[in-house]
Length: 441
Ligand SMILES: [Zn+2]
Image (cartoon, rainbow, N blue to C red; front, side, top):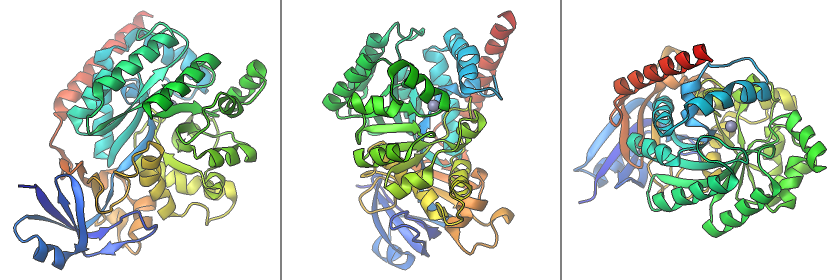
C-alpha cells in the first residue's frame, strides 16, 4: 500500500510559475512524491481514506535550499568576529580547525547546524567541508537532503596531507554513498588561492567522469582578485575558464567582484552563483551584483555560508537581504522582487546543485521537501500578499512543520528525527573543549 496524505494549507506557493499563490488548495503526497495539486474539495473526494492535515493559518512552500555552507563550523560560531576574511581565516579559523576538526567534530557540528537549518525551513544543504562520512551520517540522522562537498586544497590539514589525498578521500566518499536518496556529492576545490592549476585540471576531468558539480569559492574578495593577478597574471574566473572549469557544473560561491564581461561569461557557460549576502557583509567582502547576474540570465541560489562568518544559518534572513541589497545597488526598488528572491532561495539553489528536477518547487512528480509557515502571528498580519509577507516580514520561528522526501521531520516546531537535548549537550562539551584549548594556546 502506498503511503498517501494530503496537506490543506490556506496558501500554496509553488514557486513555479513565478509569483503564483494558490488559495484553499491541497497537495497530495504519495510515497514521498507530490502526486497532485488540486482544490481542497477535490482532494477530499479523490483521497477519502487518507490523512488530511489542515493548516488553515499557513503557507506551504518548497523547503529552502541552502546553496553554500560549511555546516560543521557551527561549533566555531562567534569564535572570532569583526575581522577581514584573510585575518579571520589565517589567524583564527584555520588554527582552530587544525586543533579540533575530527570525525566527531564534523558529525556533532553538522548535526548542530542541521537542527538550526531545519527549524528555519531549510531542507537541503550544499555543504563544503572535510570528514565526508561524518557529514553523510549527520544528514541521514537528521533526514536532511545533503550535498557533500569534498574540500580539496593544496596544504595539509589533519584530514589530508595534500591535494592528491583530498581527492582520494573525495572519490572514496562518492562511491561509498552513491545511491543514497538524500545524499549527493560535489568536488569542492576550496578557492583559487588554495588550489593549483594542476589540481583544478584534475578536478575538472574527475567531475566529467563522475558527472558531478564543482563547488568553489570564487571572486569573494577584492584581495583574492588582486592576488590572482599578481600570481597568475589573470583574474580567478579567467583562470578557471582557461583550465576548463567554467561550465554548467560550476557553483561559484560568492561572485562578489565581477566585471560585466565576467557576468556574461558565467551566463554563457550556464554556471550558477551561490549568493551569501550576510557573510559578504560581515567580512566586508562587498555586495554581489545579483540583479545584473539575473538580468544576464545567470542562475542564482542563496546560501548562508558558515555560522562562523554569518553567524546565523537563516535562509529567510538571507532571502530578505537578497531582495533588499540589489535595490540599493541597482538604485531601483524593482530590482529582485520578493517572488524572485524566494525562487532563488528554493528553485535557484536546486538548479545550482543539479536537483531542480527533484526539488525546489511544488510540481507533480517532484519530491515532497516542503515547509509550512504560520502567517497568523502579529508580525505577519494582515496578509495581503503571502509571498512578500514571507520574504519581508516572516521570521524563521514562524516555520512550524517541515517535510523532507515526504517524511515529517518537524511537527509544530518539534523534531521527530533528532534528539535536540542530546545535541545541545554535545555542543556544550565542544564549547568547553575549544575554550580550554584556546586558554592554553
Ligand atoms: Zn564559504
